[in-house]
Length: 465
Image 1 (cartoon, one colour):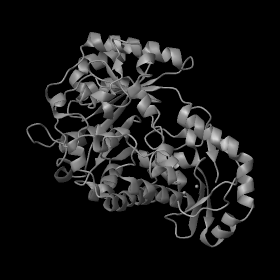
Image 2: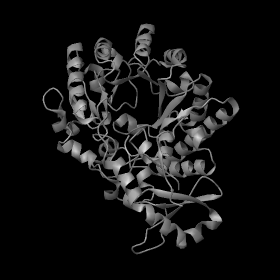
Image 3: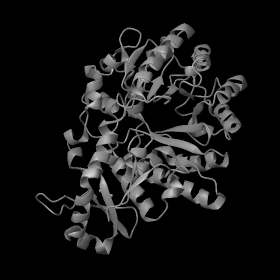
């Protein structure tokens, strides 16, 4: 990413220094001895001991130090929000799936009997994508292309042909339910250096199979774990957990389960309510926060005991958003989100949407890859609606000091639930609590324990105080 900066110095409540001076807000953190002071427009923050907070908030030192760096901080945040180029695509080669997961973001009829690309269609699509990225990215840069689902390995012949033909021109990944990932497929993906994402929702079959099962109602836990164990040492492995009311209480045990099998990266993603099934499975926010944070603590304790780090990627991304905004790897927790701006999605018939979550919402299809230039599609009204969505325009987000660490996700989910893009997140309280927990992690000096190794490389530090 461009213009990465490491911020030393972070969000809700008490306002000081009125008038033309910067407006700082006070936020309690998860650390008992520290609070945060934040200037929300630039996402600048500083941690301070509770007994010293009022003096710093009301005194001249902080406003003066901030004013000297305000333009640089604002420019850095603006670049992350509005200055990045599209560099990734989520590619759905098929609408079909051999599973009937309860919370899927794609409609049931698409997954049962949907469209699927032929090898020739997929190769043509990759040609068009390569041509587009060659015109927008710096010379030598390789865009990321993730074969996504439904289940992409139902179109295995086409997917593997595309990866072979365009080897070295994209950074490929495959997100799969693992049921079709036989030895031959695993060896091929590893030989290509492809990222492999496996979906698993619990540490036991009794939990995982509640939401992830075949059309006949059978669970796939055992098969998924077998594949996971065979790939555990592969650097490109990532496990994706969809957190629902059915598995939220098992998150700490799931972290331990994955850690014991050598997994290094996991996403604990709260379910999206884009479709009715997801809405029915949204976890209660207090329970989500309690068990999610317990899972993070478990990961920390396991690191101390074993030396093996299991990074919870969505939380690590929030930490990066706090200390190094330009280094964040995911773009769901900032506004505008990355949909249509940093990445986009291509469906099985060539339809292009800002994000995979919009594939089941036809009103957000910007056009067809096979029928119109991508640059024109990315400038259509459906895309502009998403790329123009800012938390400053959303009530009550515009008043929230953590608005640039949350981003009011997810626009597709919010539109499906409320009929508008301009609403707060469905799990608003959880995202605010997550920021408080993250600031507590920083205050406790545990930042490195929760982030990927070497995360500070190529970062420029901005000293404010």
